[in-house]
Amino acid sequence: MFKLFIANLKMLIRGRQALFWSLFFPLMFTIIFGLFFGGNNTNVGTVALINNSNSELGKTIEKTMTDSGIFKIQKEQNVNAGKDLLKKNKVTAVVEIPRDFGNSKPGAPTQMIFINDPSNAQANLAVAGFLDKFLNNVNFQIQNARPIYSVKSETMTDKNLTYFDFVLIGIIGLALMNGSIQGIAITMARYRQDKILKRITTTPLKPWKFVFAEVMSRLVVNIVQISLILAVGIWGFNAHIAGNLWLIVLISLLGGLLFQSIGFAVASASKTVDAAQGMSVTISIPMMFLAGVFFPIDQLPKWLFSIVQYLPLAPLLRMIREVGLENVSPLTNPLNMIIVVAWIMVMLIISVMRFRLTDE
Image (cartoon, rainbow, N blue to C red; front, top):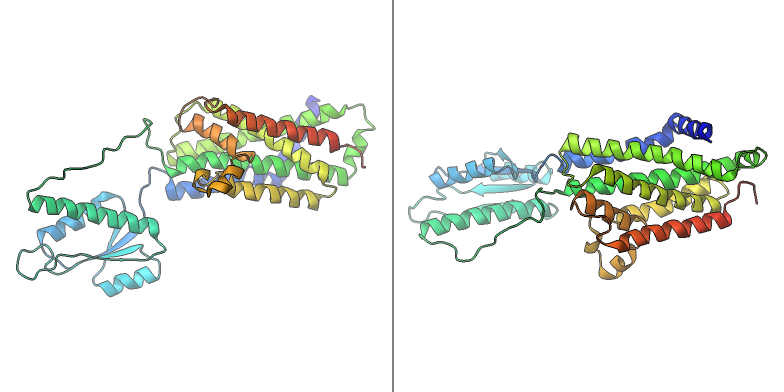
């Protein structure tokens, strides 16, 4: 059985296409999201600034916007140049400080001009909110007044979690799902199509040893997947992982078993490689978007949330995020573990009932 385990590992390593989907494809997601959202990056884009005012207030606004780090400032000579850049999507917004803005002489303008593109909703909120807060503070200072009501912000953890931290855990689940479901289903279908499974029945090798070696070799690949994703996320893009890394890996391996069991169930219903591939994609793609890989599923409509929260990937991601981001026990909500174990048992029962080494 050990020799078969080593042989399976060698085949997995030599299969370049399968190795790409298992290792480098999720790493691509990690790097792409890391470049946009990692490294404590709060920048929402570039703002074209036209400062026509020579007042101290105009200079202060320009300096404050430049030093804020919320957006990059690109100075332009006139509004038309800024609008042209906005149309070409080279900037996310245009801010004009009119001539004499901030001067106390009669007739001086009292409004700044903010030109935005409705498609850049996040940037628009950030820029508008920044300008509104800044000018409110200026108004209070001019009127010698202090605000009565305000908001005190407190975080529930000692780390400033980012969207990238959330997505990083989702990519781990995505890698486990794609690698295990498609890997097992397509491999078993190919073995059946090439009569390899039928030949195994003529050898002294017991079927359970064959399955065990296949499962263990893919769990080794899962460990490599998880380690690479976490390494790139943490050391490459400063991801904040508050919980125990070993516990994250352990729960992820439970996810590997979960999706391998689904892979065997798919293989039991697929007679050809094409059928296995089609069924695997049909299962994986909806879960990738509906089970919480890229966004919290509680933002979905209530009727849809009540369904997708029971998808195999959803409770697994909830457990890993509880450990990785909140540093609490994965059994804080035992329903998650119950759902995962129930899916494993159901898929194993289906596989045992339908999967055969010989052709039907």
